[in-house]
Length: 162
Ligand code: COA
Image 1 (cartoon, rainbow, N blue to C red):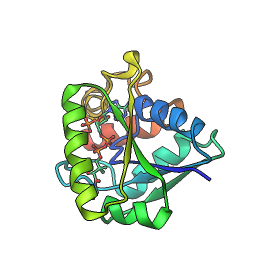
Image 2 (image 1 turned 180 degrees about the vertical axis):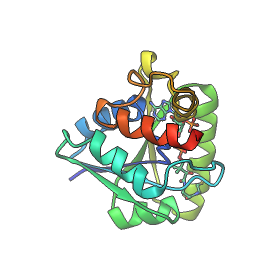
Image 3 (image 1 turned 30 degrees about the vertical axis):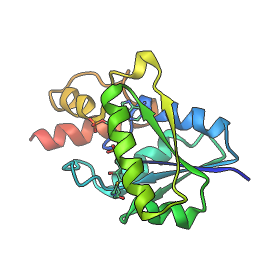
């Protein structure tokens, strides 16, 4: 059985994330989507809210399970017994970042491996930061995030503005 792990901070979950999860789920038996903490980012949504958004967005895919995790990526990697991590890459700078992360994770756990999926062209300019900025000013985010979570994100961003 092939198991993959798609980790991210998903602050918030976007259509780009869903596309990577959907494509990864087609090449494995089971895909774990791990909602994690990125120390380099100041998360706007709580971990429970990020888990909720990923779960709602992925409920159509029976072999995907969303989990929230606070520790190191290599620990959830070991706990899920996955064969590799999946990450989406948009650009050369993403590639460099992913290569550095893979190196660090392999030092912590020699079995660690990663599969990089190029993002779909039309979704590669969508980022969690852009969603937050557009939503913060009351703009339409419906083409950026899955339909199931548009209202949830818009409301929360509007409240954050007050
Ligand atoms: N697929 C993925 N991301 C996409 C994308 C796509 N198709 N298109 C655009 N993106 C964007 C995301 O929206 C996000 O935008 P942002 O920078 O504006 O937030 C960015 O690319 C990537 O964010 P995300 O996918 O949410 O992941 P991340 O880079 O924040 O996640 C962790 C990093 C959580 C995996 C990493 O910090 C981690 O492993 N943390 C655990 C602690 C640990 O083990 N640290 C040691 C690591 S060496």
